[in-house]
Image 1: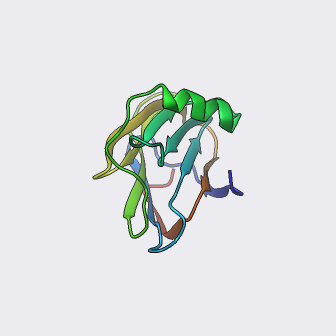
Image 2: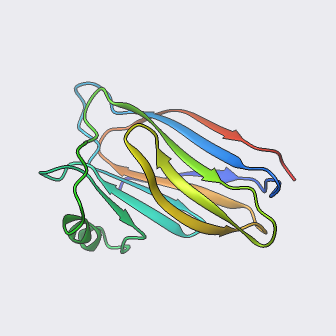
Length: 148
């Protein structure tokens, strides 16, 4: 996939929820967004957006893109694709918690409600990594939460 974008995510207070929002657009007349991969605290979500009968969500796919797409073809098709003119928001929502782990969700509101839930440690800084094949413009990144 194309060179990944990495966003440093600081340590946030665990007593409060934290939301990371990325506002994205597939430009009109541009190559559609074929594959989008999100990685956070080692949990990965691959979205294959241009398969013949709809998109597929692949939680924690193999690192090899061919194997990941082969797995995608075996999963349930979603009735949407990332075509030119589409604007959407990717959210990573971290729940408030007590202890050493908190739950998080990748969400794409209006396109897919909950794509992947996973647990993350609360003890270290991390990066949110985004990789793509196709056209995508990142308009804005917003992180809402209270720092420790």
